[in-house]
Amino acid sequence: MMRVFAALVRRDLAIAVRVGGAGGLGLVFFLMVVTLIPFALGPDLNLLSRIGPAVLWIAGVLATLIGLDRLFQADEEDGSLDLMRLSPAPLELVVLAKCVAHWLATGLPLALASPLFGLLVALEPAALGRTALSLLIGTPALAFTGAVGAALAASIRRGGLLIAILVVPLMVPVLIFGVAAADPANAGRDQALTILLALTLASGAVAAIGAAAALRGGGQ
Image 1: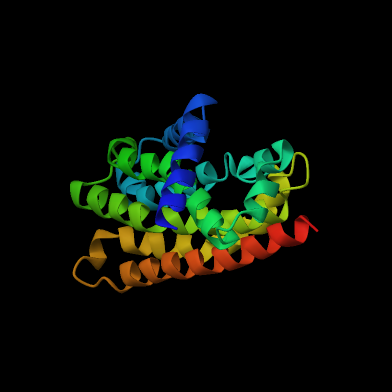
Image 2: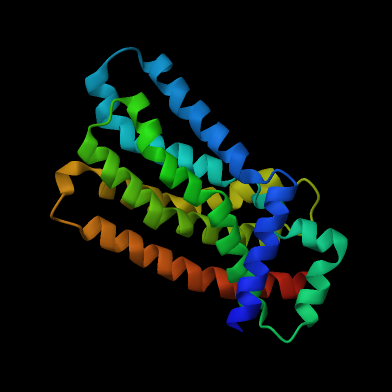
């Protein structure tokens, strides 16, 4: 099963690279949001540094939505999803593999680039490190949550807006604890970081079961 999982992750990453994937678009969108906020708020560096982690997290949530509509829909259109339903591998494993590939192509680049983009909102070094760590831990939860909406809309053409309406409210707890974990004032008191990790693990289990059930229902 681990070889099947690894093969599915490699397949989706290869597809993302070949077709231009959502990773590059997500980074560009992330940069656009983080760049526009300082222009809107003005040159108040103290204000920017206070809201910087929230700006990066909101940009991360919005950037994660890019490409979610194609997470299962492309496989539904070319018949690959039917083969996955009929394969001996559990559909839950397929869902997890596709979520991991989506996170590697979108969420991981955002987390790694966040220290650089954080300079645009005047974040201090301590805040840069904690924000990057919180994004690294929390962005998988965004990918898992988005997968449930993507599975529900897999058979709907141009279902990107529907997916956003479905999953953005479910991403709010991750956003709240992600911003709290990024606050340097919470250094040494990592309850928010622990809760964020728990949300990621729980959302992975829920996504595997929920998205697989939605895909089975869509195939009937």
